[in-house]
Length: 462
Image (cartoon, rainbow, N blue to C red):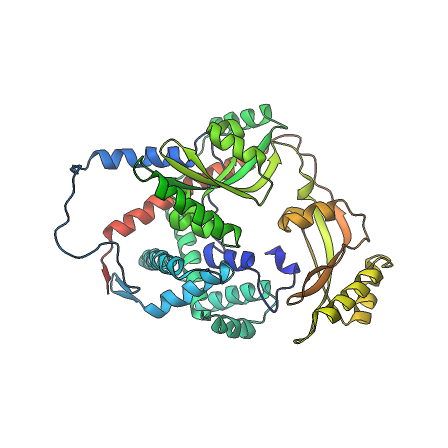
């Protein structure tokens, strides 16, 4: 994870923790090609066949007092126990991913989602074991150390940090085990039986080359269905979700929990789409968004959508944000108890001195004068926060950004030491498109596989 360049030793950011808590480490990515279908349309198509086979009266009366929506935070999955501690430790990661600002009501809802995720994870590990696929302790230790290093921690220090946050090394290793075992199972049991013809790929390549230079948007969506009777309440719920996201909550986490579209399983990610592929209401909203912004709830036939613009690019055209930047970060940390006035004085002196910095060769000596630390890394510009991308791409090699940071996190700057420009796309890669289409079909079969495991499982909620 290249973003480790940004020093998070004292406090990992909500964005990097969100990746750790809510996404896979070595997993198969979500749908990369979306050919003209919105999330809610796909969801309606997917649900139409099963629901039509059910004979459910319009007026339903429940017999008995048990509420099927109330679950305690423990379960027995095919004889394997998921404890309340397991749930709380994984929940701590999700809360941390949302900046620690989660209401009591939201925490209760997240707890239920975490339990569902742990049940799926257990089923995946069990199925892999049944196929004689296991992840060794040495592999788990190696992956855990890699995760810790992404946050500039040693494994021991990271274990201590997790305990301070109410989580544990065991919780993350369990997640790693589930991801690695499931991916190996898919590679052996699913991937060999997925076929994409050359003709299909050529058809996609032809369409993409015809659209060369047009804008493509990578969009996340949270879709909330509504009837005329429930419309106002659903709208209110959507506004509350939007407020939580704008306050720092993870869009992907809320999409997994609340979205009623088929893309909920991949954090609401619609993949790369062009505006004509979206309903008119969503086209207008998406066109006005900057990368990283959210908007909504947007009224649609049958419900509301919240949109998140994850990225933007031009089809089959080189993107400046694909340039590989060689960066050095110079960081000053303020000791506990430092007053704002003293911090401001040091920051002003730091910023003034940066104007006289003469290239990357002098960074070490410069940092020593301020008692600063230096971290260096090479990474694509697009992997940096959007607010830093435009500034860095406009800089010359050897220049430093103005200082940025806070009294709590310290002050830092980035020095541009080199830049490898992206190659002209020229055309669409046949092999890349084929790989993406195969990956999409593997993901589709994987979701069916997991659905079948859920149907056959013996699950006892305690």
